[in-house]
Length: 361
Image (cartoon, one colour):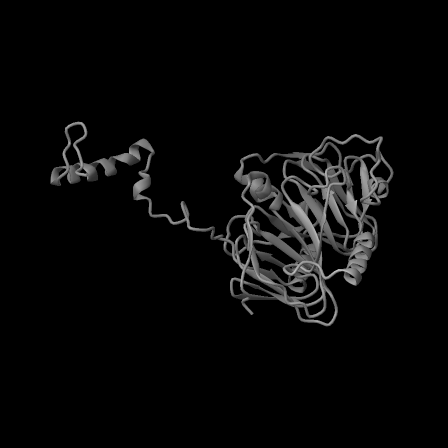
């Protein structure tokens, strides 16, 4: 069908000149023609993350963290943390798309003062025993392998009354909250909170996932449990490994859940613990969610879009969204991985997709 004139402008050389003048003048209106867009990220055939697969070696990060402990006081730092920055996302403070991780050090006798923020957070304890995290008036005593929640807008502080350094991984939804322009931060009125409940009381109250206290009401979107102790998690993994083969893509894997809803621990982040049986090589797959893994125990490798990430105990590595990946346990004992993801956000919006893929290795 031949093109027709619009407002008296007929197709032809004159119209082409007019079009170039038209395009040149659009900037002054702060608009841009979609039909001339050349950015493939706007309407891609499938997602391609700017994040890259990467592994942070714990022994290297720990050495730098201990140096910071000698050079930087708790008062100077407030939170003595080395942030894990994804090379593909720098200079943004992101470990994976929508997700952040950092390694924090609290030395004996130190207090990381009370504050709260819109971003949700958890702490996965790597080494040391005897420190606490206080959340809204309840102290959770921290031991290696524990996951301690500090939900959105909850007052929290940390203290170390032991005689050894405490190191844990912080996980936050900070990049997502920043993108949503919904980030707030408030310093506390005191350095440490008053104790309003006995220490570890929610851990004892929700000690089994099959029994919830019927007299308790809970209307918040995150879990009422502050500490998910490693003693329970480890026993569950051991029992499951005896009875089940688990998932072909992830081995024996469990999600930390909100005991009231059965859903994720927080509306913006999911947390998982998985055991890869001895010498397991998982089926490759991809999903739209991003993931940050921390190696609790064992050695192995993860192949991500052809990149091989070798990992060992306490290393941290990231798998970008929609990347093809598979895990390989190279040892004769189970390997245990902790991970956090943005699955809850993607599922809530209807954007979570997953599919199996051919192995890369």
